[in-house]
Image: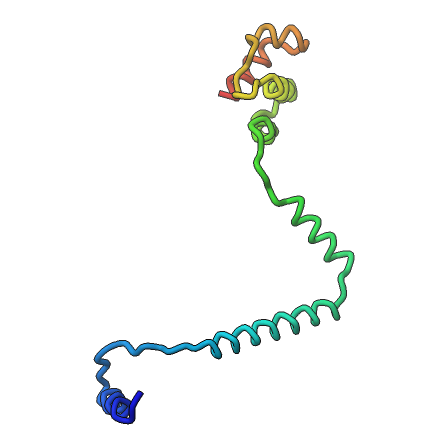
Amino acid sequence: MTGESVSALSSAEADGEDESPRELNVGEDDFEALRRMKEDWDESYYEEMRSQGYTQEDEERRQHWLESVTGEVSLSEHLLEQARTASDDLEVQEALKLLISSLDERGFLDDDLSTIALRSGQSYEAVVNAHTLLL
């Protein structure tokens, strides 16, 4: 900027006028300074973390977090989770588990309900009730 343009901006600012947004000029030196600041902060942060030590509690929290991270859940896993709260009747809950384990990869039953009940030894009524809950 020349001396004239600086004084022109100063007089416009003094009058409270903002004619146009000012351009911010950033050079390579500015980026280098920011990079160094980030490196310094990272280094001091990690030094502080190392000085505090890594406790068994930290490891347990880390393990809990890793175990709670969910990946893709299969249809049967999702349905089994829902089946736990779908009915208070233990026989129907067992029939739900049976039906869920009988689903093919597309989520359909290959056999009819009576065949599933006969093969498993479950009561037909419990299998029908479980099937109704799955629908």
